[in-house]
Each structure stands twice: as C-alpha cells, then as structure tokens.
Image (cartoon, rainbow, N blue to C red; front, side, top):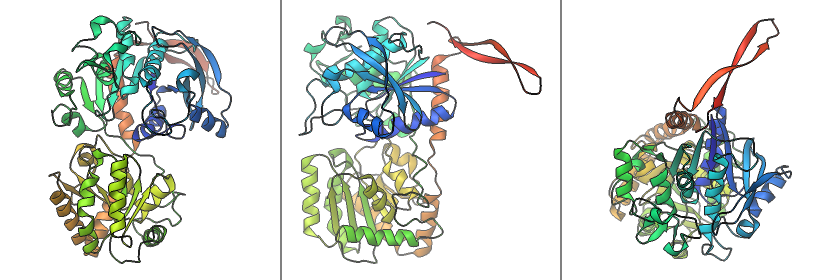
Length: 506
C-alpha cells in the first residue's frame, strides 16, 4: 500500500505544534505496519539545515513540477527523514526560503502569501499522485493534514483524477482563509467558488476545500469527530461536517505518543523513576522548584505545558491560581503564544513569585522535567481535538486535571488516571482541583491512580491499525490486485511464488 502523507510540519525538522509530532510518529507506525508511506512537505531552510545535521545533506532533486495560474513551478527533492521515512521536499525558494516558522514571520504575523505557499504544497501532492515529478512512484492514496494540504483533494477532483483522498483535521479552528479575489491565482474554477466548494462566508477556505472534496475526513479523537458536527465546536463548518458524517465519511482516531516517553529511561530526565520507585520523581520536583525559584514545599506541584492561546482556557487557571496556592499547591508553567495570554500569566506569577513559576518560551527538556516533577497537570482547554500533553503527563505520573472535551475525555479516565470537569468555568476547574488535593492527602489513593496512569501506553500501533483499515476501505479491492512475481528459490531448495501488489491505473 502506497500512501503520500502531506504535511506542513515534521518533528525534528520543522515543528510548530502537535501536527509536527503526529507527522513524524504516525508514518513511522504505518511503516512498521508494512505501509509504503512517504512524506511530502516544503523545503524550509530549517528542514534543510536539520537534514544536514542528521547527515542527510544529499538531497536528490528528481524532477520539476509545473506551476498553475499564480502558483509557481517547483522541484521535488528526495531524501530520508529520521528515523528512516522517505521524504519528498517541495523546492520553491521564492516561497519557502525565508526565516521564521512554517507559517509566520520572525517578528510575528502570518506570511501574506501563505495561500500561495500551501497551494503549491497541495498542487505538488496532486501532481505526484498523477505520476509527475520523475519520482518513479505514485500513491494509492493521498493523506492530507490540516488546511495547508486542503487543496490537494480539490486539485485532484478538478483534474478529474480518482486517486482516493483522506483529510485529517487536527484543529478545525485553523482554516486557511484567504480573500475571494485570490481564486484565479490559485487556479480555482469559478464553479468551485460556491457553498458546495471552497467558498466560506465570501472568502476561500483551504480547510473547507479539503473537507468537501476528500473522500473521507477523520479527526484526531472520536469525541472531537462528534463535537465538530455541532455549532458550538464546528467553527462554522458544522453543517458540512454533519453532512459528511451522515454519509459515513467522518471518523475519529485518537493520536498516540512516542515510546520514548518512559520515565524509567528518558534521557531528558536527570532523575529517572518508575511506578514502583518514585524517588526520582520527588527529586525532579525539587529541581523544578529550584529552577523556577519556588520555595521548598511538601504540597502538590501543578504543571502546565501548553501553547498560551485562548483555546487552552488558561484564564480559568489565572482565576484559580491564588486558590491553588492558598490550598498548599504550587504551579510550574512552560509555554508561549499570544501576547495577551503571556502577559496575563506573567502577572499571575508576579503576584506570588514564591509559589508560581512561569517560563515564557518552549524547551523540550523543560517539558519533560516539569511533567516528570509534577503531581498534577492542568489542562482546562475550551476544546481539544486530541491533545498530547495529557498522555505525556499520565506516563510521567502527573495526573491530568482537564475539561471533559474532545481527546481529553477520550484519553483520561476520570477518578482513575486523572480528573475531568464538565462545566467550562472557574468553579468547574476549582472543583476538580479540590478532588486532586483530596487524593494527594491520601497516599494509597494517590499511588493507585499514579500506577494506573503510568501503566497506560498510548502506543501508536493501535492508531496505525485503525488508519490501515481506513486506508483499505478507501482504496478498495478493485484498485489493488495481486499477481505472481518471479519465482524465488529458498536455501532449502523449495521454490515459492512471491506475490506482489500492483496498483492499477485509476
């Protein structure tokens, strides 16, 4: 089975959020399951630099792909991404050879030509699926991720190609909106600028295009797949999602986490530990308090590792911070994001410097250490498509305290591996924190919950199995046949006929 995995991020090369981690971990799990999966992403300078640091400086530029309308032509480079996944790079220096993140300028704010940058990525995916680019490889299925790959399915449909497409929504709130006047530059047919097409409140939505034109849509947790069919969580696309769902074209598959999140062996932890020996966890808690200049304490440490954005509900944390401290707790927070949220949390810390430490920024090592040293992990998100931090926290024995939404409710067992609150309010979070303080005061119950949380694996293998079944249902038996290949003589002299798949033309 051949799958082209289209993404704008890849952990270890260019990562902004959870999409980057999923884009690295899921293909590896699929590869282990026997799928010929290949990544397609832009050739950002950061990607090229990271590849050189991994010893993959030799990129084989295979061929060129033509432009279309206002979308420039590009080259396609082939190399290997760690830990051994074939990687195709979209080489268009005028679009990607610039500093900053995959989406934004170094000083902040999105690149004004993001619609062209990611239309180029989508068009490249559609062209490769049609056998262009001199790669000698075509996919049985195109798997696009979030709005940057949203036009891939659309270009295939507009080119009258029947290659199956899957669109994964990692967060429906990010939709890739651009002005309607750009549709000629993006080679969008006039007929497609309609409610049944790419039009969204008078503008163009890349994500809507991906949802509408893909053969199937999935999200990163079962609960979120249901939630985005509602007005409260669908970000204006709930009607379309409801229609796709009624047709059986929507599903939810919860993300996993990398096996390296093992507190007994992870090299980011200066003090390792396991469920039967928590001495290392206590030492980590002391070192985290010292690093953040918190006073020594025998009370619980509440960790927060998050993007500092409105979605994450951190206003509820600011509302409850003084109560947590008065109850004997301390807070260690790591993250960066929207300036107003950063300022709110910095003010929260300044009110109680001895018990609340805030680090504005992000660092992988500190993420591991804060979660490793914390007793509880606060995640009061307004909505959460899947979330990875609650899984990381459970593996490290930091019991999550979270709003019961999306993937949080799918991956936290209330009262067994964490604490969920249903009402999104300051009182809802306060009530869940009270439950956590009560458990912390009972050694036997705290130990039982920690052991249950740390026993969970959240392995990617289960998610890969579900994706494999979904791929098979989309590709269908009619697209793949098996025929005898050359006979192979084994060392014992027995002759067998090895069967090989051959993809038929659409």
